[in-house]
Amino acid sequence: MFLLAVVGGAIFAIIQFALANVLEKQETILYYLQQQDHSLRKQFGAEGKKCPNCQYEFDAALSSCPRCGSRKA
Image (cartoon, rainbow, N blue to C red):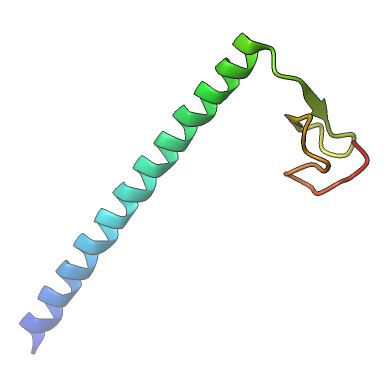
């Protein structure tokens, strides 16, 4: 019975480790995509708005701030 608990715990730890690696890789990919989007916007001069509430800069085509939802922009 003890051996079964140890094996089960080891399998659980391996699964948790694998999931943590997947999440870390997704965050890294998202970071690089955001960097690429930012550089493309700079390069092509895309217009943007700045939210008066949270100071987040977003696309001028949007009617509200994607971060806080304010429609004052």
